[in-house]
Length: 110
Length: 118
Image 1 (tube, each protein chain N blue to C red):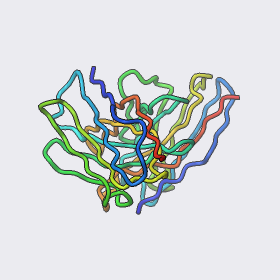
Image 2: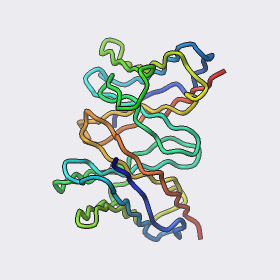
Image 3: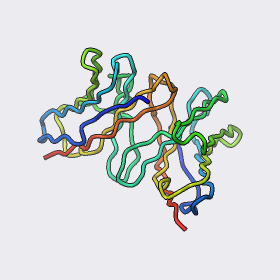
C-alpha cells in the first residue's frame, strides 16, 4: 500500500518560516492535501490540491508538490504561536482507491 | 454552513459491534464522499472508509472485513458499523465530507470517543 512519510517534529521561532515535508513514491502525480489539528480539536483542511487554500485559511499557508524530489511541502510563513499543531498530509491512492494519511508532524513554535 | 455531528455509544464491549451515526446539517448529501476517519489515543489519523452518494463504497483493506458504511439521505445521516471490536479499536472517530480526490476532506465533525473494554 502507498506510504506517506513526514518528519515527526519541526520547530521554528515566531515570525520565521516553517516547512513540513511529505514524501511518497511519485507523489508529484497525486493531489496532496494538508490538515492542521490542534490539541483536542478535529482536523481542518488548510491546503488542498497541492497548493489551493480553502476559504478562511490565511495566505501564510501555502503548499507545493515537486515530482522531481518525490516530496510535497507545506510552508507556513510568518509563523505565529497559534500555528502550533499537528499537521498531516493526505493523498488518494488510486491503485487501492482509498485515502492515505502521513504519520503527522508536530510543529512547535519556540 | 455545513456541519457534521457524530453520535453513538462511548463504550463498547470486546467482540461486539461499534455503531456510530453522523448527522449532516446545513447542506445536501448529494455529490459528496461521506467518510469515517479514526485516531487512536496519541496517534495519527487512520482512514476507515467512505460512502459516495451514488451508492459506491470503499473501505480500508485492514478493516474491510469488519466495516460497513451506509447512507440515509432521508435523514441526512450516514453510519459506521465496525464488528468484532477489540481494544485496538479504541479511538476518536470522526466523520468528514469530501468533494472528490482533488479537494480533500473539507468539513469534519468534532469527533466522538469510543472505548472498547469489558
